[in-house]
Image (tube, rainbow over all chains, first blue to last red):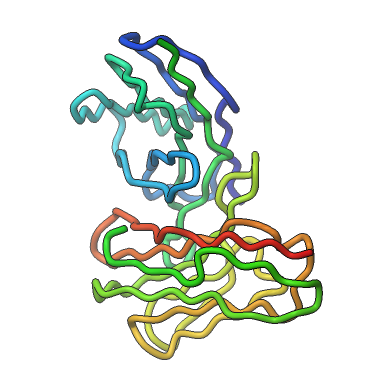
Length: 111
Length: 112
């Protein structure tokens, strides 16, 4: 089975940096994903890590350590529009390589 | 939402009623899946398909049926609706060769 943990809620200030952590325990590993989901909308893809290290994409970066079962999403220069839920998901070795999601972290950005 | 459509957007059912949630794609992706999202529980996989004629169960399949007769369509059937099936349902697609998964806009279902 798979178990994915992330904080339920976080609050940060506009212009600041925030790090959202995700820890996982899986029976197989084929990559870790981060999705952004605004209230009432569908999740949208942010990042994908399959090897250890940092992947940077504009204001967003994602880090993976497979040996520690740990990832984080780093958001820089926070904007009000970054207020959303951030979902950590792991692709295992099951047929179809479907994603297993954590409960999501609701980020509130304050002025 | 990247060529994935879901209908209806909203639905209210009475306990015991049956209905079908529709999902259609125009991207010719082989993989299609259904998730439900409940507060604090993230997205949970109900059923998935790796191609026409092939379906399999996910984490929470009870009370739901699926079929995949074409590449484009992947309907989700609720056999006898229960209040525990009140949720937001998302359909997702993925190409076999690529990692990115696209989600449809969702169907918000309430069972009273």
